[in-house]
Image (cartoon, rainbow, N blue to C red; front, side, top):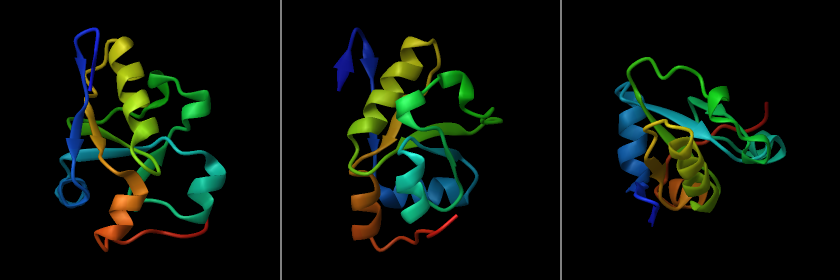
Length: 111
């Protein structure tokens, strides 16, 4: 997906899971708090798209930021918004939580 020279790279659930486990990726969940309360990604930080400000993303400390949502649409929006703000955050979890669960990866429930 491109917009004014911006690109968003699709990552598979397995790649994201491995990258988080290996300390290469910071997973940023842009779903709303009520969605995250029902089911969330392990080891993610939550920055809801409804109030999205790229400055709210914690310092990735050398990791690559990867956005995630339910189906992959909001994560692309977040990536483009971060790039528009001058941040090189060009990765997202293709298929979102739906793909994550379909791949049999663990989730966390309740907060």
